[in-house]
Structures are given as structure tokens and as C-alpha cells.
Image (cartoon, rainbow, N blue to C red; front, top):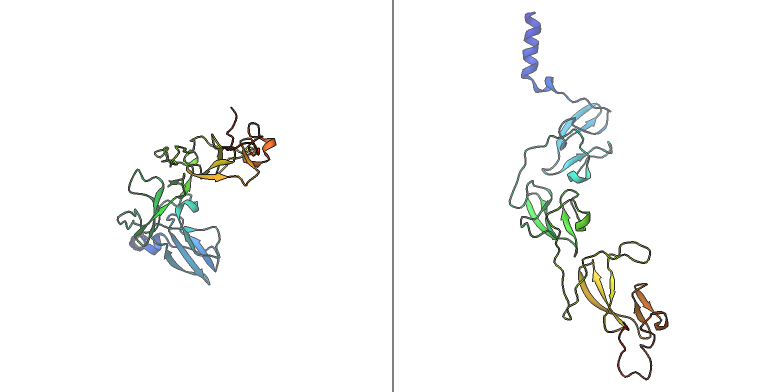
Length: 239
């Protein structure tokens, strides 16, 4: 009895006796069963313990590759333990993508590399989604504190509508176009739905609100006589 009790005490004092990793195969890269940023490199049946850089976790989808990636790209499952964070200003962890420290800067985020934050801007109209670690449209984002996007305006007062624009095929238009209110040849382009700029059809064509393209004037109601020779000034759209 004494010998067995002594063995138990010895095991409790030995970390290797408590939780010793066993290689599932003689060679490969394998995850720790509890800690998502810890993995093992197995070679000929023996293993070496490895730790991902702080902020990254081990991707166990391919046992032939030892790959660490951002958490949004890896399904850790029950492996919910992580190493102690090494935070710095702007970086909750040393590596990864994180929302901007300015709560109003929804269209910006930090790319942290070894504890150094690098400010990155999303394309116009998009906001940073810190669940998916990517830029997305406000309506499609998991982030609900950034619904209002600043919209630019041109000198003539035109600004891009807030409503999403659908094309003739019913699909969302990433850069929708809109007719000029007074000139059949001109139109507006909304880059990413929020940044307006002027556009114009080539001579002989007019903009169609039905097809969102430049068409022959005879096919656009209200603009049939736009290029009539007896007109001294461009004809506006008929109401």
C-alpha cells in the first residue's frame, strides 16, 4: 500500500505524468486537446511542443502543416484555453486584427504585428466586423454600433442614397449609378454606394434609369430629342 501511495504522490508532482501528449501518428503537426494556440510537432513518434505567436491559434485542418492563423479562420471547438495575452496600446494581443480604439472610427481597424498596431482603412461604405475580422457592409455585419456611414456630397448637392440599389437582374449593385436630374447625357456613380462622382455617356447616347446604362435616345423616354440639331441647349428629362 505504501509503495502505491508513494507512486501517486510522485505522479502528482510530475507534470509529464499528469498530462503527457501522445502522437496520433509518427509524423505530423497536432493540436493540444485543450489549448488552441498550443500544438505538437511529431517526428518518429516523439514530439516537440510549439506555441503560436500571441493572438494566433493553431489550424489543425492539415496534419502535414504547422500553421497558425487568426481565430476567425480557425474552429477551436472545445480548445478554449489560450496563452496569457501580451497586450500593448491598440493591440489586445500581440498579433491579429482588432477594432479601432476610436469608437467612431468604424471604417478603420488595427492590424497588430508583434505588438505594433498598423491602422488600416476599409473601402468606402464598409465597416470593420471584429467577429469575422474583415470589412463588410453595415447591414451584413455582426457589429451593431456602426450603422451610420458618412456620405460625401458633390458641389451640386447630390449624395448617394442610403437604400441599396438592385440591378436589372435583381442583384445588389456595388457601384450603383443614378440619372442626372437635368441632363440626359449625364449621370452619377456611387463608388461602394457612398462616394459620388460624375459620369457622362459618349456623344450620341443618353443614360437610362431602366437599364443603368447608356442607350440610344429613342429607347429612353423623355430623352428622345436630346441630340436634335435644332436644339441650341441640351434638353432635360421630361417629367
